[in-house]
Image 1 (cartoon, chains in turn cyan, red, purple, orange):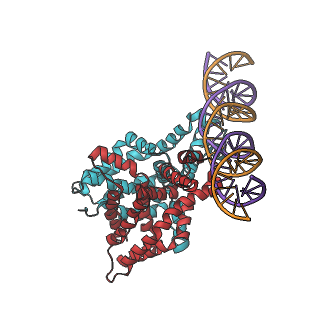
Image 2 (tube, rainbow over the protein chains, first blue to last red):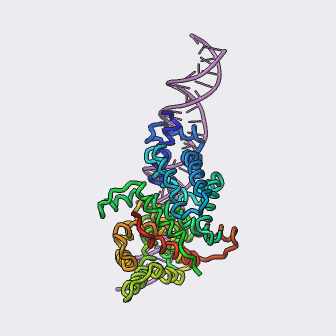
Image 3 (cartoon, rainbow over the protein chains, first blue to last red):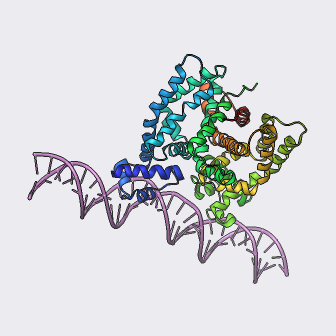
Length: 208
Length: 208
DNA sequence: GAACAGTTTAAACAAGCGTTTAAAATAACG
DNA sequence: CGTTATTTTAAACGCTTGTTTAAACTGTTC
């Protein structure tokens, strides 16, 4: 395996686990078993390495997500919100084929990026992958036409919060569930628990 | 004002804005206009300072929250989930009397603590303030008796995620809402938007 | 006013950070 | 083979981090 991908793989694991700020280049190059200077040689800077880690996933996920959402969006009868959110399941779980622990790594990274770096990742996603968001908002609009754009905005951010926060601490939560309830769950189970929650949340009756 | 509280106030502001890892002691003492060594003299270490910042809020909030929840819990007829979550509003907003921007600062700190420091804050809260959690779980149980303890566990963590994530980026979100929809909102408005979302989420029908 | 505890101060500490350098090793190509 | 081009390496760079030190200062008490 090339030095460049060894760095990317190690960075992904550590970033997901300890955050971007919490991971040093020395930890990354040590885990990847390459020289420290290799990061700056191949990627230029730590910030570019972060972008590369995220891009590898987004380039894999974005087309599948857009396709899956546009199917829901273009079917004749309006979708339910559960159907809209369920459209995420297969694309997300397919990341586990793409890379080991891909699904949970990606979702954890998403959570890290939102809180670690003061909105940098929000900018990155909304500007680099607007198609996903457009399709998503369109699907929600068809499922619940009474929602105003303002309410959709807020509720989608609530949803984002639920998902990325849960995922950024999913390992700890699964451990607790294992200890307290002897529940043996994987990341797919957690996603399937999330769907009814966020669907009901987005579909909640409007406040006066 | 004493050096000790000047440090605490400055630390609170910066921690809420940039996270615990993202804030240096030099930034804190510079904003507080005290000597760098004062932090270690008065608090011993940065970690103890973080605890002190959180404790000041929790000691103010915990009794009010327990009281408010136990009222909901002990009324004759079972509460609705909206009632349960609405029990948070007054105690949370009272933090604005306690300290300027107290509500949003506290909720942002909560969010930071969950993602910044690898579960340290989760341990801190669950061990130091178990009464709040017990009352909360009890209230939810009365409102929705069909929920199993496992489902309550998961859905309360989803709720936690929604709230702390929203709050840790609430300033950015309110800016966007202001720009895109000319919505002029304060932290209380955001909380009132959250209540229907999380209530419906926790109250969602159980998956098979 | 001397003695004392409590507090503040400037300076330094060791350790870790991201990044850069220039030489050594390897690969690619005519 | 000899000559480029590419990649790897060890070492150092300048900077920031949390923490410690010892001297200076402040305020209280006998």
